[in-house]
Image (cartoon, rainbow, N blue to C red; front, side):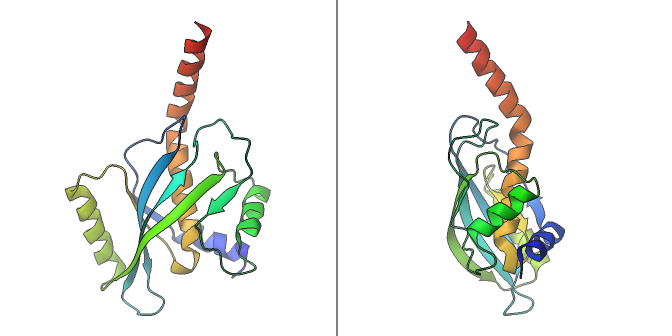
Length: 176
């Protein structure tokens, strides 16, 4: 699948079911745990469950001097790799504030049941555990990396007003 079709598929089919309630850190890195559910391509009716976390380096409005980095996103296809994906996003005006994301998938399992059942199961589990740091999302298995980026970007966008306020407060402290 080429980059354009992969991106469009991810935009169409990614659903952020439960956002991270805790905000992102403005001045340091943030660990963003997630559970990503995808319909199984092998066993129809089952759900692939990826649990992991993305380490977002300085997700503030201050851009670090480093180059874009997407580590741990497993781009395996030559036409759909890290460099082509970064170029694809930048050409379309999509900017990721820190441009450095390190993904670690801790587990890859199969939930024996349909997507709706998996959503209910994992949503209830996160609520029961009072987990405010983890997100729950669903997206196509063949473009799970893009679904995960969409989730991370939504968390950064949600946090931008807090980042601006914190930056202004920090600036005022330094002036006094």
